[in-house]
Length: 313
Length: 236
Image (cartoon, rainbow over all chains, first blue to last red; front, top):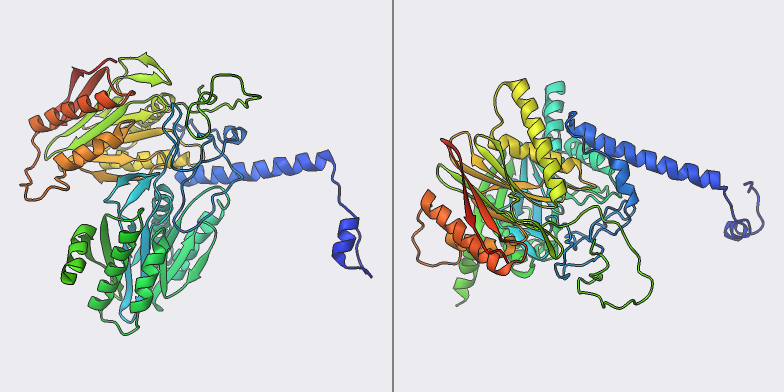
């Protein structure tokens, strides 16, 4: 369509000249979209290097089922991709009664936070995993130890986070072997972001923070399945993040000591578990410093509750 | 298919014809069943009921959901029976391949990690199976690994999965994990007590869950091997 000099606004010209494509054009576009989706799913399988025994890999079938994916609310507002559908029971929402057909439920809901201060990075997470309204586990490890100086947190879909971060650990090790040097936090977070960007729109749900210490000092990046990758000094991710932000924002100073910073992180997660139904279990605390990361503590929220509420009586 | 009997909110629809109904094919169906695994000091128990149902019917009263993988590992799969069968076939094939390339059997931890990647490989069209692996780890201690349908897993001491899991898990939390009990001595679990507990727990589940019943198959994994026991349950 030719459109060069105009004496009317472009929008008026555009609306007066609708573009009509042939059936052949639309058919071609549909096929291309199908092919690119198939190729990216093949990418997933080649990443897994599944050998001949995995005869279950028939991805073209998945397009023909148009049922909506009933997904429970995700912690950090990631919108599930609605282009790719797969057949699960049509009912949405967590309050459906169990009929003969059930909803497949994955594990979501969490509070994780990390912040930088003068002595490094503090990482604090809860340990609850929910499948719909059922608490599947109170002892999930939401911090993945990528290597002795890099940590990754998990929020969103449990399988998505653990799979992609495990793959990230493998990539970081390959980088170390190839370059005889540790990978920087920026590069590690970029690797993760690029890996999941290929699956954007397909329904992955992952909100993770890559924390570590490299040549440039403490590093903290937030990466999610929407394609965001941001560097920052403080992040809280998950359904309980708002509550955690309130506590950390009011107590964070750059000149905190290690003890005070740990206590701040612990208190923030405790307050989030107190108010958020989808967070709970134990508070796992890690401290990343120039020598690497250290596991500071693991405390049950019930015990923390007695500790914090006791002095008030 | 029962999509048209149950409406969108899970409640039963009226029986009279109320206008055009859209029929949708679902590749999944729910075949019921409950699986349970408990890890002890030097043993592991994997138990499952043997009822195979679909909707209001029972297809079979003798379809156990525990499958033996190696001499030290048993897996329990419940959910959609078709996917359970395919998944166990795939796991068996991968175990054989590993045995041929590495000249040793896979350990429980390795099987768990492998199953996680097999399940995640179908992230966009999942296996509708709730898996629990029970077995002995390299040191001979009991290990239980529980999975979700897309491969998220973790090691536990005890776990219930399947249709009656929400009824069994709190009971196990109390009796094995001593949760919500004050001033109670934490005694370690011995094998006889664990087997008795599993039997009691399944009897309770059969009372209140329609998809659980008929018989209970218990597989006890010790360093001597795998012993199987069958106990009858309510058949109604």
